[in-house]
Length: 572
Image 1 (cartoon, one colour):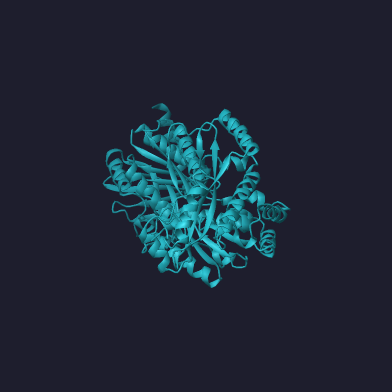
Image 2 (cartoon, helix red, strand yellow; image 1 turned 30 degrees about the vertical axis):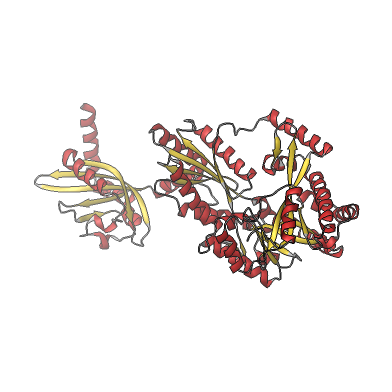
């Protein structure tokens, strides 16, 4: 108490000199207000004038509500009243508004002063806007992605950790933009960034309440689906998100681009309780979706983890398969929609594995590409397909077209045209009966080269088709200058089309534009009579799918062809 008395004596001596108090009042860095018991402002120092933007004349007689922004929580004011009544002092933060409308953050201390029967309030205000903004900037940098403005990995990791601690069920979904590398290669990184931002916007817009989407890395997005734990509900939400990315074009300049996502899903606590593991599982499931052809999603299943020794074994087995030609060719008929006559077949590869039996491309094609074996597999398939085609032609099917898929590896070989010429000569098949299918990514990876090769194929009498249109990143108008003979609409759009939804509108628009550019239109994935009727009504030219026939060995396809020769169409 002695120190307090000593301090009081010193202050009284200081305050006795009026000039001292006035100098302090004028030169304080913090704003000072003194109000009467009605809270009307009696005094305001220059610092408060500077902070608030109001002059003393504008302040005197008013209440401090003149700087109220309406953004400070009501609970803060209640706490202030409670503290002043209980302790005659309160310290806290306010969000106030300057005269020019700008918001500022104030660290305030308000004290009730009683002098005789008079009551006053003093308020000391420190403008902490700069510090708050710096803290916000630090928080923004730490927890938000600069490009998209979405939460980043760190933010979502905290959210997932909190949800797991609370024992709340949730799903983790990881989405990756299909073939995004080609977008950057063809459109440039600046436009690639624009597309990433638009994908982010769409995902965020269609998220359910309390869920969060974050930018995971590059073109990958990690989604927290709060409260989701049953497969049916998760699937509905995943399809909503993928739908709104896939169905609407992305505008870059004057061009329209359609993009798809591949997704992977893990579920807490079904698949695990560790956050790192759940994210890893979603990532593995996402890559399985890409292996399955992209534009789809997969739930995590135990055993999806890649195994290094298994990959080495697969590489060895694929090399042996190429050396021993363990590949067989299946064929899927294509019909003319005008009269339902079989006019062509697509050659599709299968691997007759010595121990695992007949394998579809899903089980080996991506690895074959990674191991650099696709070009050799292409040539083995083409040799068999061309020889089979020549046999069918000699049996009475003079106009039957044999369609073969060509990988980017083979297409970009300098001698690719010479390779095809040699295979035509060896097999004896007529060039007019051969159609080579390439994807839009192959066409756009090296535009000048692609146009030249297509022209060179035409020069030797071979046709070229654009395969799987709609799953890449191009617009059909961008491809109008390529001399394609036909366009194949990807089966994912046909299978989900009902004739009156967005998929149907997308298919119809492709058919319409393809006709303007004089391309024939092939529709893949026809599985129902309604789908067949729909594409026929929209004036597609050719149809292919399970309704017509599943891919089959050449001896079974030949039976279909013989039936067709005698007037029995497979789809009637």
